Image 1 (tube, rainbow, N blue to C red):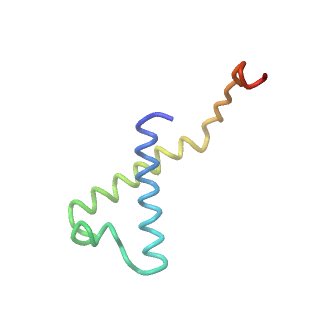
Image 2: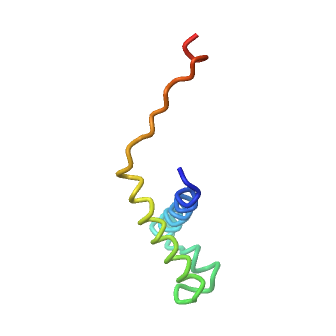
Image 3: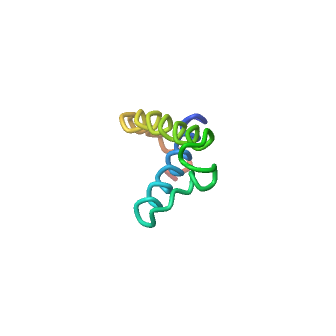
Length: 75
């Protein structure tokens, strides 16, 4: 997994936690940290989370990397 994919995964997890808070408690953590949903910083975070979701969409269709067992594991 590349560094960009790891960053995208972290942003996607942050977005999922935020949506969970909105769904269960009607509390938007990103908006409360950055000054409301209409603030520039909050919109940037929302945009980055959206881009991260698109990047992670590629992981859905990526085949699993299978590694060969090391010679020491077969002893």
